[in-house]
Amino acid sequence: MSAVFSLSSVGFSYREWVALDGIDLTVTTGERVALLGPNGSGKSTLLRLLCGLAFATTGEVRAFGAPLTEARLTQVAENTAFRRRLGLVFQSPDVQLFNATVLDEIAFGPLQLGWSRAQVLAAVDAMLDRFGLGALRHRAPHRLSGGEKKKVALASVLVTEPEVLLLDEPTAALDPRSRDDLLDLLSGDLVRGRTVITATHEMDSVAGIAARAVVIAGGRIAADAPVAKVLADTLLLRRVGLIRGAGRLRLEA
Amino acid sequence: MPDGATPFGRCGCARGPGGGIEGLLHGLVGAMEHAGAAESTAARRGLLQALDPRAKLIGLGALILSVTLTHRLAVLAALFALAVGLAMASRLGPGRMARQVWLGVALFSGALALPALVLVPGPAILHLPGLGWPVTAPGLTSAAFLLGRAETAASFAALLILTTPWSHVLKAMRAVGVPVGLVGLLGMTHRYIFLLLQTALQMFEARRARMLGPPGVAARRRMLVAGVGVLLTRSLALAGEVHLAMVARGYRGDVRLIDDFRLRPRDGLAAGVALLVPVAILLGGR
Image 1: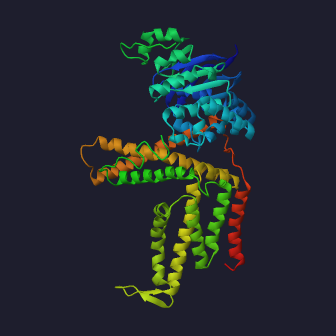
Image 2 (image 1 turned 30 degrees about the horizontal axis):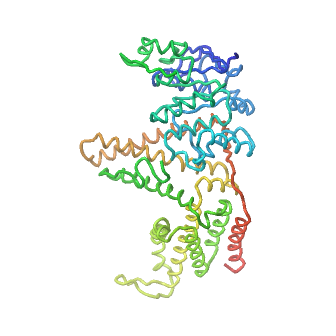
Image 3 (image 1 turned 90 degrees about the vertical axis):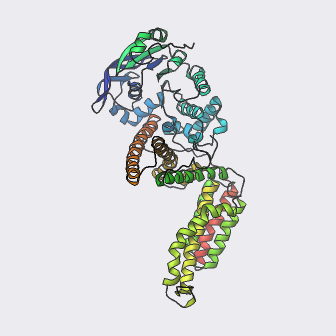
């Protein structure tokens, strides 16, 4: 298996505040990794580094075998090739969904990547069908329910068929039914064969969406092991603030 | 959430004794509700709804141009009658047009037109009761032109907005050559002003929920200043996040939109007929 991402001694700071420090991590093709950590632990920052939206202040991030630098992504061809291979679903759909209709939203990514009109429309139709969003085609995304917004956000990223899918708190602020619907999607055919990295602090959904768990606390990796092993280590989870004193976890297959 | 509804309710929020700031915000959210209602009228069956947005944009633009070109009150009256006719054929009743367009425009442009009645020199046709000021014939004509032009142009503009989904208006603007930066700005403004208004309203409601009594003037002023500051910070953060979300999907400074319009003969005919109006006005000596 080849490495999709390879991080060595990576650090990132927002002015004086150190968000990430000394991160060493390798993610190989087809892996399903959960980034676990409490709020403010650095999960979202790490996803942004992997997506080329922010750049390491120390150390090196390699993506698809080459260093991921600002200079690399300023080249149009490199940027297009990189964005075609990877998609990020933001935590807040209100940030991600900025177009006037669901159709425009899903078409946005392919259009920016230079797809033809016919290709875009075919891909959008396929996504609308797959997510059961056909009836919402001409609706304004900001008028949809939370669950529908999340589906549109996911469809708008998956439409370009990225090899790597980065998910930032995909089930945050969803009602139980919407959350279960989304988890079904994230454990089904839609993500099969892709490398999926999910940042979350919702422990009861981790087992269903990842095989490997990387625990981040205070900007550092506190553990990197199979999900079952990490979830069984209640001492660790308590220490990093993912569960409370006598917390028990409900594990989903 | 159904079209036209917000998290605050269908028509503008739980009102409370919150003072001027919240009143203003409630009003702004109410105005945004009108935008939501416009989306539902655009989805109805009707004459203008059935036309291609590009044809509508060009045609109604030509009619607005005609309004500014004509120097004859009779032509202006005919154009206003055309606007009313198009509204009726598009299932927009006079009541709705009056509420959403005519009353507001009459109040605003009427305030500007009123002084002209007495300030423009010319033969007096009557004197204002009580004040004795003379209303002149040229003054009356000027006021009628000002009011007529404002009402008629606003009616044509409203017909475009009320019979076309906002996203289609933006795409039609792009299709007729309006710069992508301006179209993108309009689209984003429409999208995010709603979100920011909701945030502002929630901020003020959260603050009020933790207060023991109505705030004094000074406290209210401090709340307003602090609220504006927080909202500005949040809007900047939101703008940064949205930009990153766009970059993550391949945006490099040029927004590309999908064009799913189909121009039919009737669309071309409608736009062509509308384009003839300003030409006829110019050829007919305005």
